[in-house]
Image 1 (cartoon, rainbow, N blue to C red):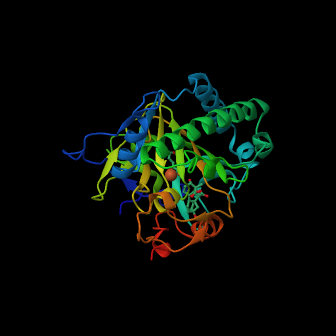
Image 2 (image 1 turned 60 degrees about the horizontal axis):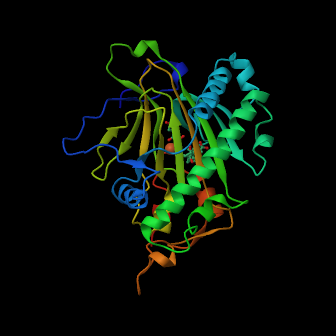
Image 3 (image 1 turned 30 degrees about the vertical axis):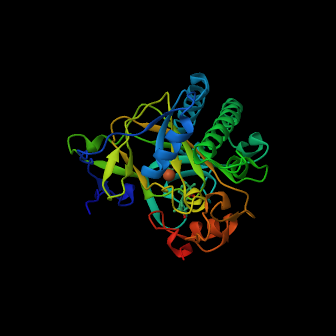
Length: 323
Ligand SMILES: C=C1C[C@]23C[C@@]1(O)CC[C@H]2[C@@]12CC[C@H](O)[C@@](C)(C(=O)O1)[C@H]2[C@@H]3C(=O)O
Ligand SMILES: O=C(O)CCC(=O)C(=O)O
Ligand SMILES: [Fe+2]
């Protein structure tokens, strides 16, 4: 493993660019406004656990406003930003991800989404809070549409079987704003710095939007990595560990990572939709044929999350819950 010998970087590993697999047909694109969206979502979640969403109905202005507020925050002097930290796990974080020794070339803000989104961000400016609050409301509505459409594609009733887990008033939502700063010393090296190391997201789905800077990569079933071309007008949806369990392994919780190219800063915003802490996570009975056994032991989201927060970023967190 190559690491940059700069103590300020906490030995952040370098990553090369993935070679495009000749047989990879590209990231699936789902048009949420079209009648066949449900089937397309199911196909993408089975094949990759990941897809790009277009015609999602979220005004570009909402995304641009939140991005501009995030950029304004990340441009503050370090001492100012650190007044909102350290992330434990919520707040401002710099290079350290979680509390178990993971590091990456990024800084971030992590907030819990409460039923009153404004109260969770008392540490940020008023304009930031209102941009965030409007964004959260819009993304919630869109994620609910995506999960309903997914249920339709899976042919399960009721159609809110999935969306109600993510949209309940006690659902455990998190919003994360990531900033991967430039790193001029990388120029000419043809390498990137690990921005966010490889991992799966523990929740049901994650809804990601970024600026037009590359870096996100996903892992295919054969273990190879492919780059996701950025698209600031679209959203990217990740299947998380919970959704893999809810579908008894039919959907793939996608392994992904971010390689910080060091040239153009990347700014991303990810809304993680988790179920309520007391929610039992088990395959949906509607998806279990007669006599079919669950591949997983029973657990609640609260139990899973506790175990997840004790793990390292790259660990396979589901393995200890497999039968
Ligand atoms: C190393 C860690 C950071 C993380 C909590 C964990 O112990 C393992 C899961 C990590 C992750 C990945 C997806 C999301 O970014 C995140 C907020 C989450 O729910 O699980 C992070 C956690 C974090 O940064 O606190
Ligand atoms: O910043 C990104 O583009 C993705 C980060 C990510 O995967 C995460 O925060 O869980
Ligand atoms: Fe992630």
